Length: 286
Length: 338
Image 1 (cartoon, chains in turn orange, yellow):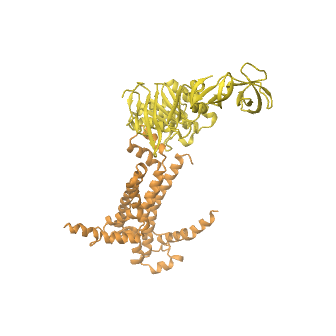
Image 2 (cartoon, rainbow over the protein chains, first blue to last red):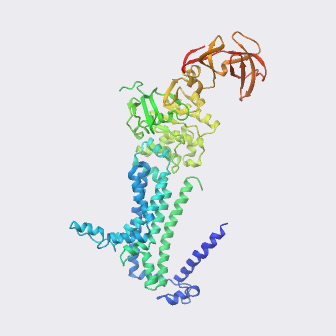
Image 3 (cartoon, each protein chain N blue to C red):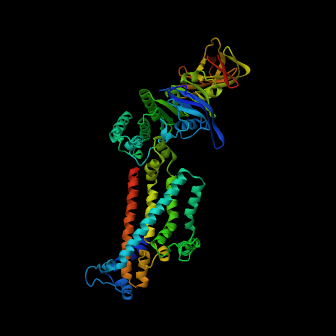
């Protein structure tokens, strides 16, 4: 029964990935031939088993270090803030309920219904050099720095885009912690902070890890937000990969970058699987 | 306000409204130190609400809760000298048995060696040392129950609160665990309040039972008193089995009247021979109930059930039925025992 999906995955995902990987290590013939003829700086293996020259090109490129730094900082900071906000909203809703938590939850879910390209454009015009944000300050005689084309704008945009999914995951995870388990901790003498730290967060760990992995992988490979809101250089990998592919016409180096991002994402995905496995083991399911 | 009992537990004029409905109304109860008291009643009578007010999870609209001589009415559960065993045990699934039991001591910032010693002792007491590294999901329901009990006992609380602790266990295990709980409670001399809807459970392990009805205590007595002389018709109906007949009871015979006559089936005797006070009766049905038989009798004055364990008659047998004890109620209150 598992064969059809495996075939579909193999044909439409596995095969192109394999082909791209071979291209990145110098297999420029066969199905990769057209790309190697059109592209610039294509490194063939020249009779050797494989070549890592394209990888060396990318690593030696001064833009690469800047892109790595930008991508890592944006992904890390935005993920941390997304988790803090969504966990905070989830805890507020679980422990107190009330109007404030309902309003915050509704607000955090709003981006879900606005296409990323629209919200990126809206943020661009809001934070831009003549945007509402600067205009308001300017009317009070304060000249605030422009935020667009900076890492900060990309971080703000990434938080906006990623918040709904993380809030949904973490809120539902915290909601499913049974009352009795919280009350048992209260009865044992634990303070609210201790209950959150020792009971609620560990019990909602899997949804939190899902939110963490999906958010960080999503931001790591994002294109629209950094394209609209980020600087031209250094930029995030999503934008740089596109630049290398279509603007600089260097498909092989573009694919190399994609593999580097893929490796990073795989690392995060491995953490997700490990956490799931650990949780299943703890609860006696495996 | 002074606490009458000095130690133990005292509830004074408790009133609790939930969802606009009065759940508990003017509830008063004194539990002596070292006593085991059951709050017994049907679903919705307010017994769990009462327990949750004792534990501190609910604050009463009015009234006071005294624990070990201190007014704790406004104090949260984390600061009360009580420990609760929850209906579904409420063990933290991500912690081992040891960590579950050690948790209350850890949050009190006890030393590691002290925690080790106390947890070790209490796990020995409930025979669970061999499971100290297991997770709750890896042990049976009865063992989980004992872990929950150990977690409560390790705190050395002034009062132990048990919320329907046996309701998730099968019938045999329930009897075993309730005996274990009673034995431990006696050994430690710990004041205990247990909530149950199971009268067998309440009768077998309690020093005293508070029978609750619609947010009030109908009667608070020893199990024997409660069974032998239920002060209200409600209690008589709730505890044990009862023949309920409307009429007047004189010299073993029932005649027309407006009193409610409560007769325990074990106080009805069927015999082939007439004795003074007995009335002619016919057996209409005999139902086996394991170690006894429930015999349905048709007397000239009433239809009654009797419990018989020897010389069991057959349906259709004619003879005489004798009532040895009757409880007479007027307006729901016991007026005399005949």
